[in-house]
Image 1 (cartoon, rainbow, N blue to C red):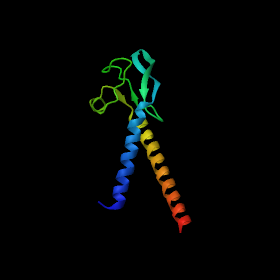
Image 2: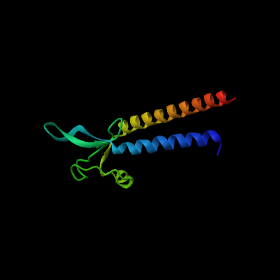
Image 3: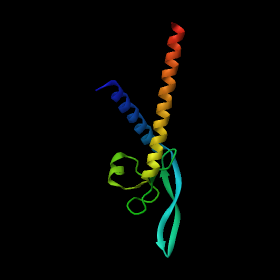
Image 4: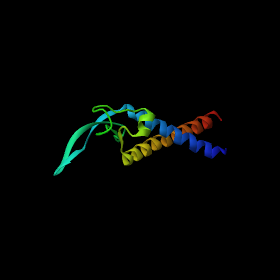
Length: 115
């Protein structure tokens, strides 16, 4: 595999891992719980950072719990908010790219000082 492609795969994998690890950050989200003439809103447990993207499912999940393991995510026990997941993933990708750029600049400066 070419060096650039390997680097892109590593960056994306690290951003994906950080996005998944952000599920350790809890929060609450206001969502529509039901419709009786008008929508009824309630607070629900949610996880993710910087945007809460995994929310306690109102019909299939035990109330007040969010399953964060990959199998529960795949079978849809809780609600995954795709737009918020995309923003969180882009945030972590930007963090990884900024850290990588800073690392390369630091290495170049250090090498120039040694020469």
